Length: 354
Image 1 (cartoon, one colour):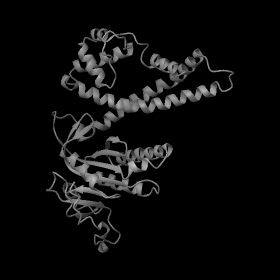
Image 2: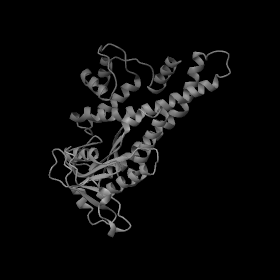
Image 3: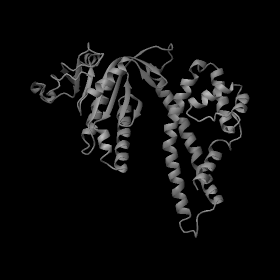
Image 4: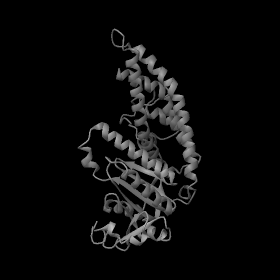
């Protein structure tokens, strides 16, 4: 049954069955075979080392022709085609893993329901007919949704200063943040798969909602950690505090630790690079469970904002970043005159030496 479903998905989604070799595709697209191989592999797809093996469909050929046309138009510098393809491939891989899991589950559920009362296993032609029916109903809607959401995200991204057309390699001033779940590795050994899935679903949905609500954007999530960015310091601080509040309200979920740093970052294919990223990551690793650790630049930027308060961490040192004072970010107390800093006990006297 699995092989039949896989075959039918290939025919329905890839523009037909496998028909072309690497050399045939290269000739059809007007590209060198080595370049086609590099592009295909950068997209995260396997290329057989034998160039005479049939491994491409009509849909694949059209996609590669489109890529060649985009590059030829000058929209993408030829020197950047491989990094761009890699970025697309990584994003699509994650999206399709989730979608295919849902689709396969739906297919098998429908098959089980359709043939529950049959005397024997379903015939191959019956399986193909049902898969075709499901794909016909869902593919057009899915493609339409993805196409529009791509346009919507493109508009949203171009609205950010960091994403507007700039000279290649230009740095942009951003707040970079990381948030991760404390004790996640130990927790995974103590809970079952269903509970772990529920936790990860909550983490991903909550961080996405909170970050978007305060004008930030997710750079990437890796398991128990999210990397995000915001253009305004006040937005980044609100994101961090709301994330802490959200997880603190969940009795059985782990605490978060969050690090924020403000400085110059290099945007590159949806990711960020630079010392500010390293500082934010180090701050996250050094933060106490349930706390937010920020660098001096961010604390100075928000010093006059009554929405926040900061407690100095006097002797906390990060390797390679010894010249910046660090702070714990919190909400203001109702009774500000009683604020003696006692709630940060131990933070001012511990040398983490990270």
